[in-house]
Image (cartoon, rainbow, N blue to C red; front, side, top):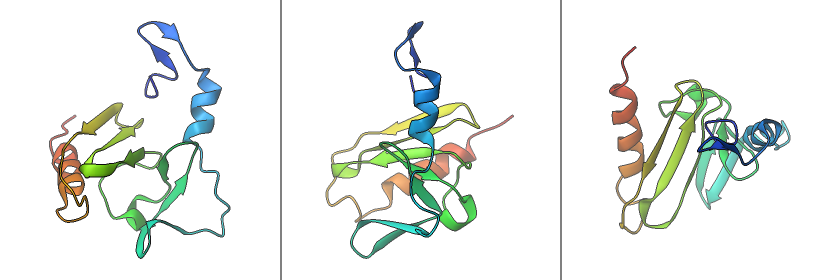
Amino acid sequence: MMLNGGRLDGVQILAPKTVNLMRFNHLPDAIDKMEIAEGNPILGCGFGLGFCVIQDVAKNGTPGSTGNYYWGGAASTGFWIDPVEDMYAILMTQFMPSGHYPLSADFKTLVYQALVD
C-alpha cells in the first residue's frame, strides 16, 4: 500500500499526499544522525511518520536509493520500501539479539545485487 501511493487491492486507503508526508523527513536539518539504540548512530537518515528515511545514501553506507524508507523490529525483523526501484522487501526472522549478526544488512546487499534492468 505504501509503495502504491496509499492504494491497496484497488482501494485508496490513504491519500497520496498522506503517504508523501509519511515518507518526508520531519527532523530539523541540525540533526545529522539518529540513534535508535544508544551508541549505534544511523547516518544519512531522517525520520518520517513511522520510518527512517534515507536522505544520503553515501553517508548511510547501505545499498539503496535516496528516499528509501524502512524500519526494523525485534528478533532481526525488518522491511524497506524503495520507491525509486519500485520494490519492497521484508525480512522475518526469530534471532536475538538482532545486532549480533548482520542479517538485515546482508539481505539488503543481496537483494540490490540481484537487481537487473
